[in-house]
Image (tube, rainbow, N blue to C red; front, top):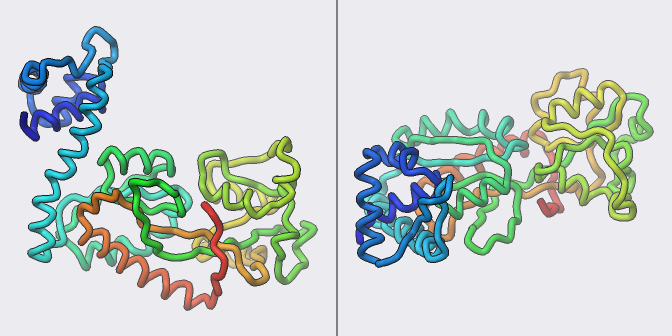
Length: 312
């Protein structure tokens, strides 16, 4: 049994196809198939049910894949230990970022991080929280930036910053003339929300106590992007809540529609998250250092006080 054979097994389990798995592993399909067959012969079990289309794991195959993933991940720790001992910060690093954080945070830190750590090859994807959790567990991401807490046993979290909610209220709305907003003022029935699957949406719903009293209410307008919510609000279709960093780039005219909360200001917790195996910690810590420094400066400059983070 070899690490390479286990790596091939994981590739087939992921792609459910020997040809695609071979392409991902940069080997020929016969080579990959032969190595997996040798492993099955050695173990005297069938890992894959090849009669199914797409290929499926057998019952024992599922257990083998779980253990193989642990073994392959642990094998990476040897090089990781050497890199950390040498103080080397480099190599490929796969980072996921949730959609409500990516557009604002990435431009703020990416150039600085690349300049400071030129040997790191970042591969960044915009992913929903559920997909991020799955990929971290499967070893297909090294880390991610997401709203927390997630309360996942195998995932560790390091808080980067707390991002306040800001009300975007168009002229003519019942709350427009209020200089500051209380959480109790919010009504889910005139609130524009992101679609299901966005963790920022969950935070907004947590704020709106009316929603908890009326669980059967239907939202008339939902969108997949915060920018669309702003445009809909400008048309007088309701108010919305924005993550603070999204407010830094809106134009001067739209800034007139921003209303801050009375203290304590509700906020979301944004963290860098990673598997408990703690691979590539030197890169994770480098990202944390760069991002935290930049965000602290941005928030301090705007003189925003963040007090009470909410669940995701």
